[in-house]
Image (cartoon, rainbow, N blue to C red; front, side, top):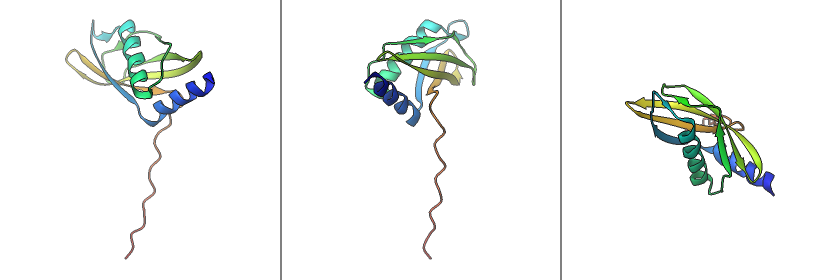
Length: 114
């Protein structure tokens, strides 16, 4: 049962990256703030309870900076990458992607009838 829950959460993250916003402290988003924000975003996006989120460190306040995190859902771990997408003054916008996320397929053009 727990593997299915973790897989469902990872699938929700695969479909859409989560977007978050945090205030910089010392030109980075502190690890503890990031962990809480990612946990909240995951729960809001998936509708599932997340036991915990642990990140490797602070998220640097610069575009394309990233940090690795691990979410625990029903006892199963889900690997995540949090990447800063925009920095505006003291605000950092970021996206959260599951390790199992893959790029959205490019749609095949539909032939038009003449």
